[in-house]
Image (cartoon, rainbow, N blue to C red; front, side, top):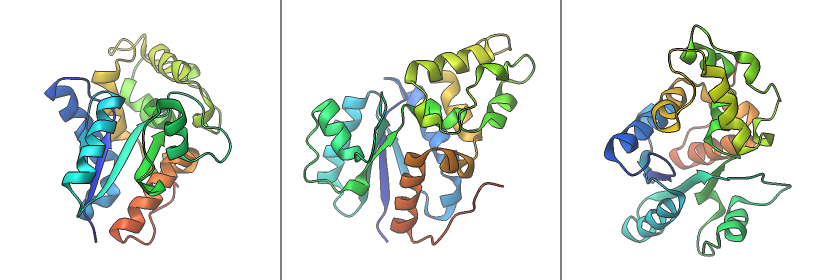
Length: 206
């Protein structure tokens, strides 16, 4: 079994923000507790790509994954690799399809996929009517994702949605099984992780 290293967009430029993102993703991946992938927050998406390329050279023994926001809709059957090659002009020709993954259209789609976690995070005063009820959160535009969370929490003690402060905490609380059921690209990532670490099947949402 190869060790897994995930280079993820997020966390800003500071150590504290990156540390919080790492903790959030480690909780999100808690079903892999015995074979936990190493999560490396990189800040911006271009830095994530650069760090991913560097890791491919420095960690040949590992299965190295790039995970970034799509920043827009991913239509049809286009692969994550082809999407990023077209949108960002990144050179991914020598990278396997299973090593490139997207949060569509942004990580906030994964948060919104579990409205119970949103309600619990914001608590008293939360406006759940602000959260889109579409079955497929990947269809929600990025700006709408963030404004929906901001409006949901506007009249709570957290006073809206602040990506650096709130995203990792919500990410740690959401149920990955629920997100996989509603976000196809999340399921694709977990399917790859299961194959690499040798887990036959993960629980489904109840």
